[in-house]
Image 1 (cartoon, rainbow, N blue to C red):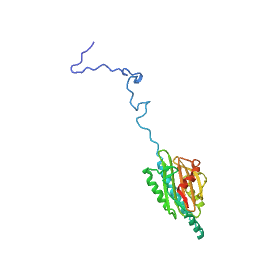
Image 2: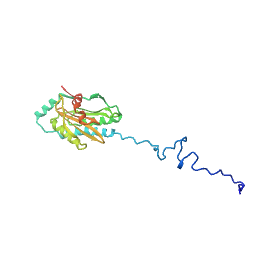
Image 3: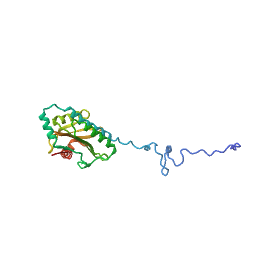
Image 4: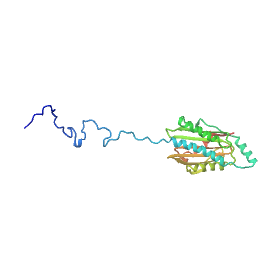
Length: 244
């Protein structure tokens, strides 16, 4: 027996089918219906993946560290030697010039404000080298392409180039180990030179250093090893140092 609705009480629609028509088992959408919203099981969340960490910071910090290494090495190798030895060293140093090239190995100076302050700090650190009369620190290449070279050098009278270079690498090795360190060609400029491989924060670093009676310097190739650059070192040094 059907009773009429109570006066003033609204009629309710028939009970809705569940799951709604057009949906399969457990409410899964069937073809022809709009896609589910992001965030549902089986679909990626609406958040972008984290960006890889920038390698600029370790490059910058390492460049400063090497500038300081040269200064520490210079302070540690000041020797009390006779006047004749000093005169000879000064005469040899007078023939040497250190200049900052506009390109190095075909790479242009880095035009990036993130590196401007660091090159200034490198140069100010090198200016403190004992007896320095000219110096520079610069970074070349492209950070975006991970093709970068840092170079720094100073002109000064050095009485014992062998000891100077040994001390510089020893001090650098206290903060970042250098492996495979061995003698490198000095080309026509003479003195002593060595190359090795280091790394920091996952960034490989090929590092070659030299010292002679009138200069000391280092060239660093980021994202490379010593075996990659050893043959290129003499030519790049010659773009920085000249002898009359």
